[in-house]
Amino acid sequence: MHWESTLERDAFMLMDINRSILKFHEQPAKITYWLDGEKHAHYPDILTTSHEGSCFVEIKEEKDASKDEVSARTQLLSEQLPMQGYSYLVFTEEEIRKNPNLENVRRLLRYGRIKPDIQTIERIKKDYFSSGECLSGDITSSANCNSDYPVICRMIIDGMLTKDINQIWDAQTQIALNYKFGVQS
Image 1: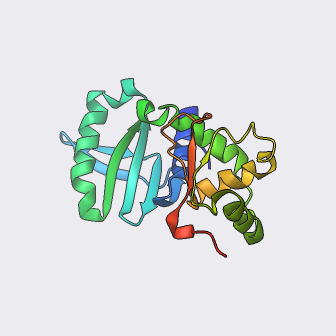
Image 2: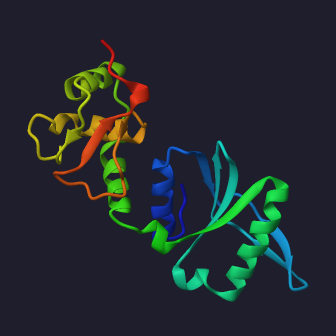
């Protein structure tokens, strides 16, 4: 993905880990609209596709999102684009850079990039979740889990394991098996 700012890059990371977003594209379209009798062109930063539909997303710093021009455009496009089958929203710096959410996403993406084979996934599920308990604690510091850490991160990304990314990742962190992906005998 091509990003024009580190804020856009951070937004891409959040979208990359969001399981409800099926795909997203940067600078997807030119939207021409009329506002106060003048013709304008707008190039939204991202187009997301989910089971709920498609949404144009504009990434803005707080100071820019509150400008009259941006607010007027956001209101107009939010009202008009649904008639064309799209929604529209502004994703602000405050929402994007909220922690520990963003730090957790960075951690998952850093370590969980490689898809493990099915045998490794089944071993992880059996080794850590066969009794139905949660995996707790900071698994990065546990000697017996270190080699499994990238697999566990990937399983969280893929939704096989659950972890609240809005909570600090520390010794009290709870990682659970998603009931849809139970342990096989």
